[in-house]
Image (cartoon, rainbow, N blue to C red; front, top):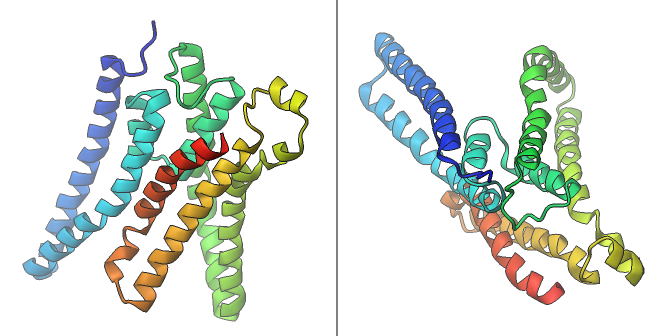
Length: 254
């Protein structure tokens, strides 16, 4: 039987991640060497390295939460690889969930079918690989256009940036609200499509609301009470609170 936690997968993923870590250390050593050549103070170099290392802890916490979440269905190696090298936490969870749903699989059950596992891995990989393809082709043109727009009109430049960000968020909001219409479906339709509760479609909405409120509270603490450190940990706090709230919401809403 296929095992998503096979030691072979651990070895393959370990080699890939070790290669990426090797590249990171290579450029770190080159950067330190270059800094010394241009006479940057050693204490400043050390402080920069330490502060950068500390700053990575907050994103790493949220990534760890994502790996734990996905590992229930996909084992540890695949989520470890996807979220350690080039994956996006918000994208990977949605892509994996959509693929499993399309295959008729449950997010809470380990995928032991090799065909389904490969399909999910391809969905997670092909969707995000376009960033690698398009970045070297379009980034310079897009960036130069934004710089020119900002030079002409800073207000419209800010609005454009906000609009692009909201466009990205809207894609994920569609995933959250896509089943809300189940509230108005007939009992026969719900049973035929595998829904055990009419109100279960509200669970993602409620979880999102809890995560959003948590993020807003972190922002208020940072701005009003000057608790600056919480800014770096706002994302993992929101993720953890949202995931924790899913348990009582699921018990309540089915």
